[in-house]
Length: 174
Picture (cartoon, helix red, strand yellow):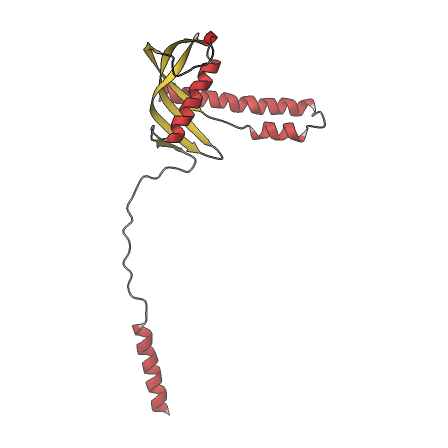
């Protein structure tokens, strides 16, 4: 009986060592540049969503500018996107002035381009001031006290001023 037990134990030990984990080959980790989450990433100017955003920007520019003639998108020179809870675009475009007057109606394909070409940088940064809207809807039925109105306006304008400071610093000093 001792012989059988000794044989069984030796067999189990041999079996255990044979089925043990083999040495693993380690994968070589290669360093690569990965964009930060929520950071700005370069986008191809030919991408469809970038082109659509540029077209919308030109329409918005034409509606808000005080120029007497329409502008048309010539090309998109560069683009960056930022993914947060929405997609933000920074698009640099070249606009051409058309010969069509704004008083003549809407911009059509028949409008000829003037010789002068302008380069613009459109930045679509849609900041939602969560606190402002939260308190606005929270106090919708009751009139909020003066102190809360003042605090909300202070928060709103402080965020707006910070945005302007960073915007101008980024575009004019970097």
